[in-house]
Image (cartoon, rainbow, N blue to C red; front, top):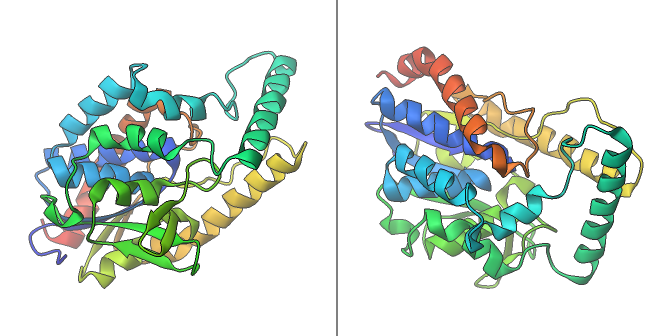
Length: 293
């Protein structure tokens, strides 16, 4: 996965915020900056794999618009995540808090009796429309997905094997999406260890890395009314600190301003994609200087 003739991308995780990767890819295409390889974590693996298959950011944006703008079966899982109202949609504070409490109680009870909020089939229906039923090695652009093995506790980089299950494994947010069996391993979201997988890009032979970080932002917490609030805050802190080594490995780092969007808020896909476009456009001069385009 050498970067000769193009940029090597490290696309980070961040739930719905990761749709900003599409905007970044649109700008790279418009500026005629080729993509030599892609390594993705979580939503970065999904968008990255879709681009590795289609090599057309506009096509991917069209798929997102058609799929997320509908209520078809492939959107059921994502719509369920959106209905967890961590983002503030209700103006009346009292009603909003009641809705949050009810939703958190529902999530807690469901996770106690199931491996995850979504079933494996629901996760497949959510990711498969963007991809192709091929091996990772058959993508147009060289691609790798990162995941974490629950058995060994090690980071895993998937460069061969079926593409759709590999992306499902990289996207499997613990508690929300089911772990994926892969040989003797049980894989979950690559962002658990490495939210911005720039180090993995370098291990595949890339000399220069263009990273996109859409991860957690440590904005002021809204409060700690129960255990779920505390766990959620701890996870945000962990992801922020875990992302630092990967960020340092990037020769150019793009940071779309996606803080206002919660990681479940897929309904605002157009705004999030636009954030990616704006951030990439602002970085073009530096990209051309570092990558000699």
